[in-house]
Image 1 (cartoon, rainbow, N blue to C red):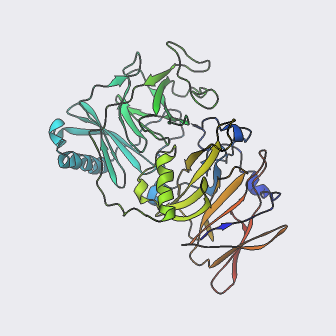
Image 2 (image 1 turned 45 degrees about the horizontal axis):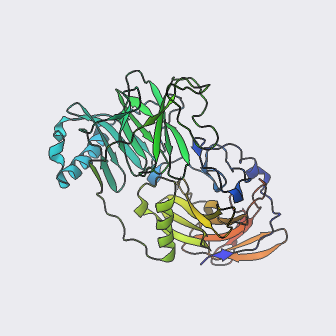
Image 3 (image 1 turned 180 degrees about the vertical axis):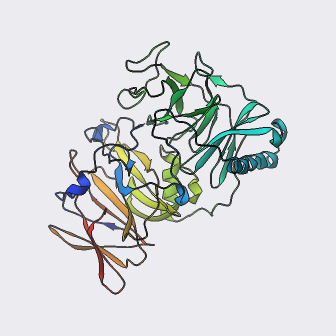
Length: 449
């Protein structure tokens, strides 16, 4: 059960939180231009160490430093030249064995060289994805594994090189892992993914021995496009894109402030194997479960192991809805935002779906373990969803001009709607009061502590 609350729009965010809303963590992400209805809304951003939901969608005001399942986070050295981490031969062997097993099970092992000829070069893990760059009898081969899936490139496929280079993608997985070959003179590079909606994300690639690995959080379906640009290690360069979405450079064109032009990168051949090799739960056919599946399938995000996300609570009505989901110690929000895209017919509403970057490492000692704010309404409404510690039995909102308003708790989670800031103003100030089963107050403070 969820609540829809009519809260006074003049509430203000506490100063200590407002000061954190400064710079965007995922600075490489650019969303397409908003609909005419919302064009004046500026982006929201948060300071380093705080997960971001890009451009006017919402924010998670909590630190996220651990990786999936409580393990290490993304391998991102503090340098403009990304060197792969030292190879762990035993871990690489386990992943390559998984890939080999699926080639055998699919009857495709005969189309590649024997497993004993596979030599790992490096491996990178980022947000639940591990891409191992290897050579099979000398041919480049890429093996990506997640908690439930295996994806293997075709080492015999003809590379589709970027114009005038020997750089090509050999594998693009459904969850945003990219592996390929790189020209010998390319010491560093940036990779840009433009999702079907026009949203784009720039990321740096890991390079070693003529192979590269990159990860994107943008959807990589058949309508996505990719570009690459050679860069100079240690040389600061302006972003690829101008405005909201990148435009590929023309033949021989180099944008001022860049050392090399941006080049279209042809999509690679289909993966030799892309399959689920670990057990997954049965689909959740409840209303919130169906909406979560719909939201994931239609968002611009590349979602890792989508079947592992469990819908916990939901708020709003179509076309303005938001759901909170979790997988172990990870939590996310996914929302539908209806946009009026036809100036001549305000009744035409196009839904836009947003899956937030996962927050990892829920803190059991915090009464409010996780909070996500997401835009869900044409009248600047926001969904506020979160997870609570198990000993929290009741929750209510309190504050100036606001009588104590109970908030239903469902499976240790809450969800309600509140006014969004107008004209770039601060988020509403919301004070929550949490009590245990005996009625004793255990927390009073901001909803995003």
